[in-house]
Image 1 (cartoon, rainbow, N blue to C red):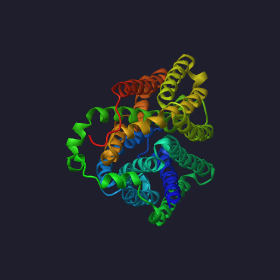
Image 2 (tube, rainbow, N blue to C red; image 1 turned 180 degrees about the horizontal axis):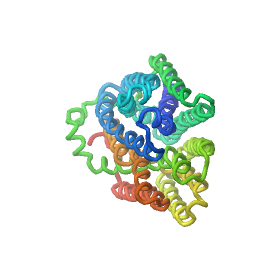
Image 3 (spheres, helix red, strand yellow; image 1 turned 90 degrees about the vertical axis):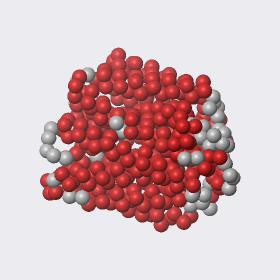
Image 4 (spheres, rainbow, N blue to C red; image 1 turned 120 degrees about the vertical axis):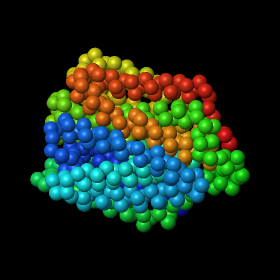
Length: 414
């Protein structure tokens, strides 16, 4: 039963990140189907603005599902959020395009995305905490690395399915089947949900009369304000790094810089996602066996050096620079996710971790493609766009320095 719980958690992560990545990878085709007719750059700018707007639903999901997870169980939160995500994905796949129903198509697109993002907060954040709790202290990083591997496997599956979908002679319609596939796979998770066992760590702390069980959300936030702000900066900027390299960069090189073809961009995305997936497991293993803090610092320094070289060489080093950066990213992201979980007590962990992740996504992560497109629109400077990426890395460095200096540790009560 314990192994079944792990397998369901991994499979759920694959399917959910398939749906999540497919939306971003389908930016070009979705913008043509659900937005008014305009030039490619304007359509993409509007699409990424909707992409950013939808993230405003994530903190709501964190509050709702975080409370459910901390009060009633990680598995309860995951089961409910899976159902919502499945419904929103299927509705999007059958919605008529802008030509047929006008602005209603755009509204439905935004609504489905917001429901999906809201459920994502309750699902993926709870799964990361759930798997880490079941794996135990000595294996939490590698367990989290496997979750990241599964997330990228889902993204890789999305990139592959999307690639073949766009290569067919029916690209204007075949994209719908890619979303239907995700919805059908989610139904499988709903059927398997009865095999999901609650984590022992949660059950242990649920039975204890801790002071935090009686605090209001505002009191919990106030008591953990320093930890929360640090977690927001780290989660948001780590997500921004991912969105820049995976969601934004390929489309940008095709549509704006014009140095690679759409097919080459799709292949590049598949390569980047594959590298991130494999390196996530290796990063988790190294963090458990060696030294997580030194690994984080070393990988961040190498990332800064790489982006400096890309700034100096510009177009010559773009693709190879992206490959090096995505290779380094899991080595600081994977252990940082576990560290951010560990600074909050078990009975408030999901609320604080998920809420910081959601606010970080809203401020930095999902807004990164939009701000990068905005910078390009105003300055048409590749160096400035890369400078935005460098800023994300520098914010992570500053927040990590503060985190290690503050010496936040896990406490039973806060």
